[in-house]
Length: 387
Ligand SMILES: *Cc1c(COP(=O)(O)O)cnc(C)c1O
Image: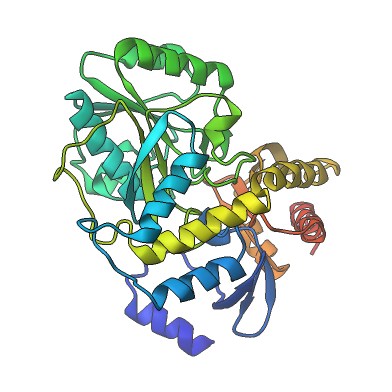
């Protein structure tokens, strides 16, 4: 195990703050390290493993497709890509009628920014404070936190940040050059903050009135995580573009921008070598089928409510507030979160931070109730200082 850690430390660019574990295997909501130690995974590859690790249906689809055709550029038609596109549009909000396929969350944001500028012939994008949209230069320009932006300026011009959930500030910021408003429905990296229903309604209204495109970043909230296939469906609000990625293909890298009829892009204006490759499409089809067959969205709603009720029952002085939508859970602490993440790891639970004081839980949506009990017990235990 030490040899493997040395190799990574030696040969990788070391851009991640590492936890001291070598993960080699997963099944459902659990993962194992090289010593055979078991963990309940509330990281899920940063909200990717919604259908569970080593999901049989996804694995079968990948094997089958790998033996048929892995790569097929967008200049040719492809059977699984056609099926996936149809399936994606079936489960998406009705306004969204077409999709561009890519390979990650940041790529889907990049595409949405280009599409918004192309479709409106305007340049400016309004984003929210605490918003996170990825690390490539365009997506980073939309991201708010100076910690991510600072060393990379000058960023792409035309981006402005207004306070999340403050309609008047947003309304005043919309101008002649505003192409789009870009928002998360639940801010993930920013601390698990759920959008206000009234705010979202009014944002949609002002966008429609002023010819501004409304873009939702559902990269983290999509595919059942929040208790609906897509988080905007809780609010009955339909965007002009919706960016998705993370859980889309059951763990295989994939992203997409879903677009309404208001967004038409001429041939030759955008593209991606790997975007819409048959391997990822086959995995995504299997993951979406699994999500629907097992009603993972409903499961996320019920399990999220259950886990939060288990976390709220005992008195834990260190907890300031718990915010959640489905199985996207943020526990705001009165102190820094980092030491507690390490204590949870020792207790066999992997968890994420969201900023410096929020403990974030994103378990696979297939997690069992006994596993949820163990998570709640461990979280309450470490926060109460029981060792
Ligand atoms: C993770 C994330 C991204 C970036 O996705 P990558 O695949 O890491 O590029 C963008 N937006 C949100 C809301 C995310 O959570």
